Image (cartoon, rainbow, N blue to C red; front, side, top):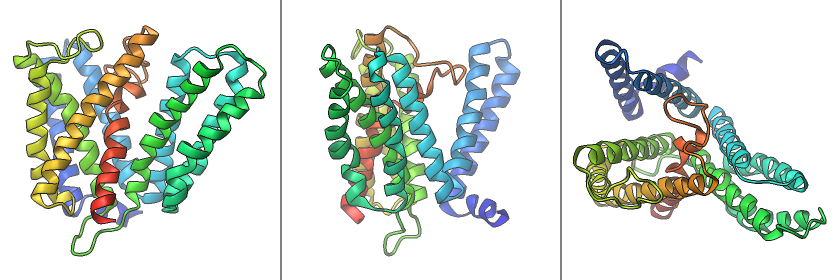
Amino acid sequence: MSDMFVNLFTGHRGLVLGIILALLVLSTLVIVVFFKKDQELIDRIYSWWIIIGFFIFGAMLDTTMAMFFFAFLSYLALKEYFTLIPTRKADRRVIFYAYLSIIPQFYFAEQQWYGMFIIWIPVFLFLLLPFRQVLTGENEGFLENTSRVQWGLMMFVFGLSHLAYMTTLPPVEGASVGGKELVLYLVLLTELNDILQYLWGKSIGKRKIVPKVSPNKTVEGFLGAFFTVTILAILFSFLTPFTWVEALFAGMLISIAGFIGDVVISMVKRDIGVKDSGNMLPGHGGILDRVDSLTYTTPLFFHYVYYLYY
């Protein structure tokens, strides 16, 4: 165990994790000293300690632990989603099967069984769940309820499970970095993209980009984050086997996909009529509010990497 902790903060990954923790400590001190009366900021920084702490020790410490961590994250996201959407009593069995599908999906990721990993939910579950819905005998709402369950599985189990599979990827020939560094790279840039969209939008944002869905999103905020994240993708490319050109495209992909994931989940919340998906994370909302961008960036980035190197 002590060796794992030592390895956690060595090499390129350790350098980036050290920088993240140092910035978090600095931000905490600034908020405590200068903004101690701003409860929202205090809640946000408290939640960031929890988020980053769980991510470091859940996803970065050990591959097996990462499987359980990401599987539990998928479960929480799916549970929050099912709590929000309208469901019938007859849908409970179908929802139970949806939860149960998390186990084999992450098992296939842990075993690096790519063939089953890639078809378990999009093929087998998409064929099985409608039939299970038929067995309930409820005709009304069949299409709507089946679609809701299948969409939730695709977004919050299939999409996020790519994080788990990515942690198992070995270093490519000639590179000293592997799956955990790629996961760190992706999550870091995705979260920075969200933060930078907010900061650029607050600073210079004027033109709303999707006002009916997310009123705070602006064209200037999107473009500011897009160019900044693209530059950061090149600067942090030492976490990847990428050339600078590949890192450039990775940054563009993450920024655009992160924005789309954010507004898609915002549209879901608008449709349901809620501002936040939950209150599990003070100052941030719920799990869906934190993984919204990752639901899009994760599968797209994974297959970009897989196509290039695996």
